[in-house]
Length: 157
Image (cartoon, rainbow, N blue to C red):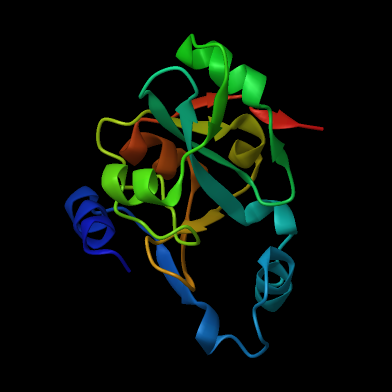
């Protein structure tokens, strides 16, 4: 787990669990495998993406179920920009210091975090831990609280 996530969770003192892909009884090749290994619905496994405005250096982290697509026009509207796109690897490392397959909303600092409202329906969700192959299980209310996330409809059907 990334050190800044460990520190943020310790400081907040919130309940959470940590899951390591390599300790699962089956090979984890994607969110569906991970959900099946845990006996969970795939919607509880989230993806966190660093998005950026196309016309200026404005970023946000979005958290949405892994089986859903992000409605980019809604994110652009929230940020009050014309368009948004995925940040590149260099921006991801510079802004959040996370690998592309370990992005977490925890530790985003001053970067705004947006959570899809559907995640709030689950008792817990799984998010990246800032390192490849490690996931944090946490209640969506707790995640919202410790990240200062704005909850809104950001997923396409």
